[in-house]
Length: 270
Image 1 (cartoon, rainbow, N blue to C red):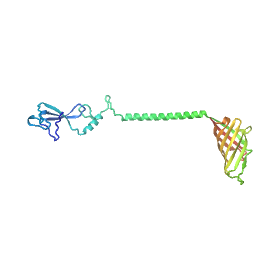
Image 2: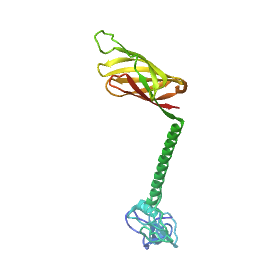
Image 3: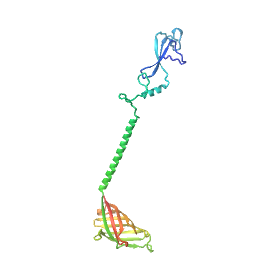
Image 4: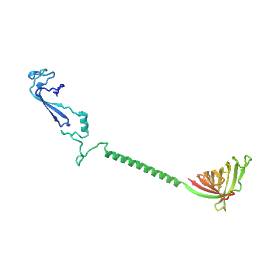
């Protein structure tokens, strides 16, 4: 194709020029009609003789792209958005209708909403699954544990304080004992206790460790023993039926003289 567009803004003699829009993509073109004899490679000569030596009186239609004021890139962008169609008219964005759905692309609000709903559902399902697993584990753990309560009474008949400093009640003094244990009615002998305590704070507390021996096994406890209030000690182990025992023991004086004590065990056995 030979363009008749002159860089200086002139046209060949006898040409006609108009602008049409072809169906090929809606791109505007300018159509020029001119005898090819008037168009030369190096210039024009009178009488229709081209400087190249060719002469032809047959007119030819020459399509020249018209300048696009918004640029080819703008045209391509609009075509991609549906603002240019395959006809010769420029249109705005297509309107959705029963036969003309509008595809808003992968970033549409509808698709984004679906994705958000999908992620929300997935997150909710994960949380629910984690909760079910936690409850199942807790239930299985509880089902595998046996909790029992044992109440005995100690008769403190052998408590002996060893004064290590020879100046009365003082930090570091030692308390030893091996006392009988009776059932909660305080009538039947069921075992015995034996252990030791170290004075920690004068007039306040001892730190103790001892074993409570029964016919079916033993329970070891350790913790503070307070002079003027109830105490709670940890079950740290055992033997026999209590070999896997853990839990706690409450200690409470039954009288102000401290001659008898309640030992109330809460025993957890796997």
